[in-house]
Each structure stands twice: as C-alpha cells, then as structure tokens.
Image (cartoon, rainbow, N blue to C red; front, top):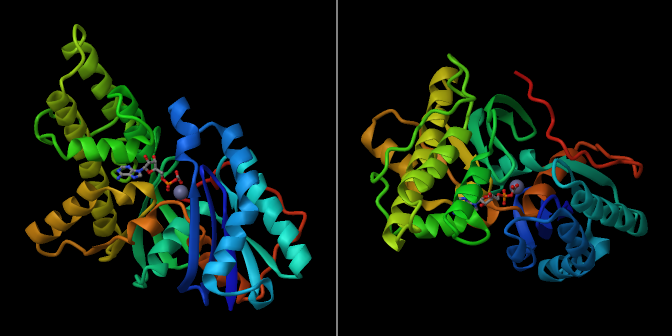
Length: 342
Ligand code: KG4
Ligand code: ZN
C-alpha cells in the first residue's frame, strides 16, 4: 500500500510517500526558518500562509520523487493534532481536497504519535519499549506496546525541552532556530563550567518521571543577570553557558528515560522529536550504556526522521488504513495535545 502523508503542524511543510508503513519512497520537507528568523520565533499567521503557498508543490514533489502518480496511492494520512491551528488547517484542507478529488480514503494522525512511529520507520521494532519524545512543544515519556498504542508515563509540568533550548538560545543571542544554534555554540564550551540545576520547580515529590525545565531556564537568566550585567559575555563565556545548560538538560532527559525503564522493567528505549537531533544527548545515552552494565540500549532515528516530516505521518496512517479505518471529510483540527492517561 502506498500512502501519501501530509505534515503542517508547525513550521515545516511536509509531504511523503511511504510503502507498507516502512519503506520511505519520498520525504520532502520545506522549512520556513528563513521566514520566521526576523521575528526570533515561529509566527503562526506567517506559518499558515507559507503552508498554503507551498503545500501543492510539495505534494507534487513528493509524488514525483517517489515515481508515482495519484492513481498509485491507496490513501492519505494527515496530521490534524496537536499544533498551530491555522497551520494544521492548511494541511487538513489540502488532504481533504486531494482525498475527494482522487477518491482516496483519508485518516488523521496525531503528531506526537507520529514522532514515536518515526523510530519504527527507522527500523526499531522492539515492543514494548519506552519512548522519549522531545520537541518544541512536547516532552513526554511513553510506554509503547504496539506502534499505535502508547501510555503516558511522564511529561513536563512547564516548558518542553525544545522550548527551553530555544529560550536559552534567545537569551544568549544565538539566532533562530535556537536548539541547533545552541548545540553548535556548546561544542566550543565546557559543559562542567557552571553547575545548573537538574531539578525543576514543577517536579512533584516522588514523581521521578515528571519533567520541569523552567528552573533550569531561569537559572541561565540569573547567571546572565548576575555575572554579565556590565558587559555581555565573551564568546567563550557564552559557549560555557550553552554547554553547561545543554549538559543539564540532556542529563535530565537521560536520567528520567532510564528511570522509566527501571520502573517498568522495560529494557528498550527510543528517542524522537527535534531535540533528538542533539549530538550531546545521543552521546550521553551512549556514555551511560558504556559506563553502567545493564543500561538498556537507546535507539535514535536519523536526524531527518527526528525533526518534523511527513514520512512518519504516512507510516502511522498506514497502520490505521490497513485495518480499514477511515476519517470523514467533516474532520476538524485539534490544536491541543490529548490529555494524558496515567
Ligand atoms: O519535533 P520538532 O521538529 O517540532 C515540534 O514538533 O516542535 O522539534 C523542534 C524543536 C525546536 O525546539 C528545536 O530548537 C529543537 O527541536 N531542536 C534541537 C536541535 N535540533 C532541533 N534542540 C537541541 N539540539 C538540537 N540539535
Ligand atoms: Zn514535531
């Protein structure tokens, strides 16, 4: 079965063709970073307009790159939640129009579940496993029993990990998008230079799987306010702050993921979402596994499947379409994440 996937939840316009939920025939992503850079963050209205301008061409490109025509497709999968409402509406409207015109079944998928599915798409199929999803809007630990069924074990009580990276990058004046800029700057710094806190104000006592990044973010703010009020930090000081923040954020993510493995007795884990592109995060998991015997192996998809893309949506959609599931053309978007089951 060939499924066309469409992604427009934030600032990447994506279309992809995936065969039988596992073989990526094409995966086209048009980034909007240049459009949002002057504003220092994603502007929802700008994102929606750019999606509307690009979506048709991106779908055509995905079909051409896959070497197929609309007649070869068996269904369309589109992200309808969570995300920016105007941005989601563009992708959903395009998917509905194409499904109607090409007489194809349509299914909607959840963007966060699609990030989890990216690990399966990249060849990781150990179930059950623990999934850590770290993106600009979400930081969640799941127990994943099958590709379409997952239970939330823990999530953030305030900022998402990617949001903390983006905000700290902004404080350090590192440019947009913040996460990759911060990790590049951190490469020149010393991660042990400053002991930033590993515990946040919104962690609940006894709830080791709950994240809280607001304290860490504020600690960077206080560091800049108290140590650099007269002159901006030098290049080296900035790199040390970036590296020390990154070290703290990555350690928190590693600790809680491994704690979830211990608590559930599940000895396999995978990471997805944009922050999973972070090289220090990947290295830290590997260092722990090398240092501590019995530490479960942690799988990372390649960076192109960690960041927003439509192949993960097409793959997840296939899981529903092959069971005969369909969504009606009256389907709406849902900008908020599904409430956690605990
Ligand atoms: O999954 P994603 O592409 O979009 C959302 O669903 O939010 O994640 C984007 C987030 C942004 O916050 C971005 O700064 C962060 O992922 N990110 C990184 C890196 N690459 C992207 N954070 C840290 N290090 C990176 N190398
Ligand atoms: Zn995402």
